[in-house]
Length: 485
Ligand code: UDP
Image (tube, rainbow, N blue to C red; front, side, top):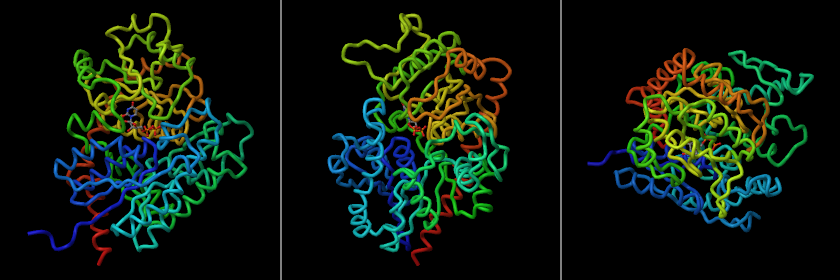
């Protein structure tokens, strides 16, 4: 039979960081379940992270493919194989300019991407904001470019207002609070909580890139958000009506993962056996375990890790704690308090490396989440209906903290005061203990949990047939179809 209108074909082009690659792969799967032909464009190392996921999706009948761009880390001046932000040497070991090299290196991808666009002529290119040249590249071939930030609408609005009104330039001290002007919700921040690139008065490679990204976004076809309308309706309306932007909210995209294998292997292969992990959780009571994880980039110093261990122990709470540091060859771990693992046997599980996050969050034994407020993690927490301890570190995470604690009211802040890229501000064990107890036990926990559960239901409804995200996705696909004629 076959439909009369040929299938819509979309290219997805994420930047090389787990927090972007993971939702992009989900997004490509999501579009494919709606009859779109999807192609993920990436570099060899990144492709290896999700090749199994794509293979499984193909086997289940989805039209999803991967095209690999040749990428020379040597040409970019980066260490061999360093194709993803989470593989970058930590800022303590290497000069800061390695990060800017990483950002510059993305330009190397422009030419090979353009060749692919010319060859395949997709109907749309969805590219991350950090590829400022993507709008022009797509334009050369008459292809619309959509921007995918990987952040939520609320934080995008905060960022816009900060750029427009620069309230941080009017305060007298670093810790003085100011209200984000002209934004609903009375959002208070301090200069200390702002990213370096917002505060910096001199132009850097990064701020130049951000400026170019903004310009290219304004000339793009619109923005896709991994969020759902009801979650941040006030800000979705503000973005559209006050800031005058075009956007589609199609998330939470992680909810497209229904099979255990899909939940268990996102981003990287887990360093813990998924079945063991599930078995461990099966032995626990509902809502009794707190899950502690700080995403793919945070690299806490040993003193902070030790403090987390002590805080968890004194909270008396059962826990799963993901520590990115893997055991060194000698086996010694300077961050682990003496006898900690022995004392915590059966009570706490430390995952060194990579955890099957949504598999854990979705388990009924998990009753709370200590998070760095990366948007994917926050939204995964919301989708699982768990209250959160918010512990922002860098990027736009301080804005997300406000959304979770002040707007959605499903979390309590651990009390971080300062934005410090990857290593974070120091938090004492007492603060950790107090915040964990608050989201796990007692009246506050009950109230937070009931709100969180309601939001999780809302999220599921949004992606189900007829829900807001489902309908916005249908509208986008229809628009792309019509555009062709
Ligand atoms: N993640 C995971 N296992 C880990 C750490 C992270 O599966 O051990 C996933 C997590 O589910 C999320 C992503 O990695 O989808 C992290 O994205 P987020 O925006 O939360 O933070 P980032 O890593 O970008 O700081």
